[in-house]
Length: 533
Image (cartoon, rainbow, N blue to C red; front, side):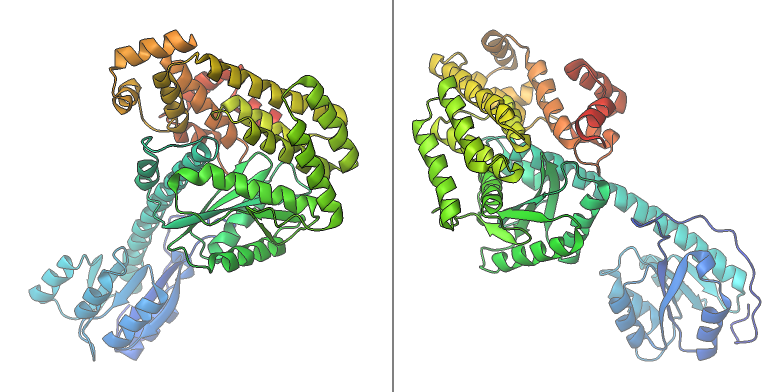
């Protein structure tokens, strides 16, 4: 092709296939052309088969100043530009946009081959430097190479972004299912994966017609968060999606934002939903508490028959509206006052809850869950993985027999854990070590790191943990890792291979063998048996 504007011949070019976007469409790269010769612009736009190059022309400009504005507005992947132009020359324009678009591929098309121009172009990381006159094939080859480079960078960035998101989700699972205390490195955990915030709140989103959440449903939730520009991480925990929403300040606008997210979710999801929202807080050590606030607000919304919008946690209990709901809450309060963790107490509680709920599923499960939460507050014990499992079972009861069995399991665990604490069976160092292991299971840590945190020698810590618990240190680590892995397997967005990496295994086979040894089944069998994913 000659850049004089004559009729130009199109020639086919073999191109690499671009990656698919999340909806299966091929992602097109954006191109901007900056050239002061209209005939050259016409030649480039009309005679190059941009679609064959997996590109689309986002716009054209006829001087450097107009080009700078167009580039900053459209944020293209590739720019074709001349050097000598009115207003601002091409090299100055490139220098102005380089900081904002460091990865943009710049192809210079010029009739000037002065060493000064070429030298400055190299310093500005220009991708290619083509001298006029040139033909279509020269341009297409140059753009094709730029497309390949841009797609490699996009793929690399996408993989890195997915790895970071996976680590954030794994860390959030650990913080949601474990109590954290000062001195356990929670601030470092959060900072190391790039989460920066001054405050946060938690949304607990429950679809009333779904027990197993599909990949499409999870992607719709993520799309809503993206459209609202929410700085958030979502995970699927038991029967609900937990959304950790980060804020730059403690301003009062967070409630409005939470309501807008709720409205968008209700509009995008086909099933009726209920949403509980925690208080806004700043403490990195209160993430589990904030989750329980959101969970309690969700359960109270169910009892109050509210769906679609936000139900905010009220520490003073002011959300207990209506005579009928007031009666249910008074019933729960009376049961908790009488509760003593005995089998007789549990049997009576199950009978009353079944009667008061009318065995209507949503009411029954809400009352059972609220009763168990209140029971744990009345008889507090240190967080434990078994207790988390027992509390999860409260979300799926469907009759009086299941209710009684579930309450007996919770009460029995509370008795067991309280007896262990009263006997002081474990030393304080061992209890701290086990708590640290559960919180940091997904990280690359070992016996020495745990010992350094506890200010003891590795040999002493290893011997003490084994003496107190009868289980070696590494078995506690394995149990904690598999606990996080089992929770992550519920999320259909996360591949089993990615779960392995998230909990600290560099290859899938090591994870597969460890999982099978710990649970007597493969990760795929566990996912299919538990969630049908």
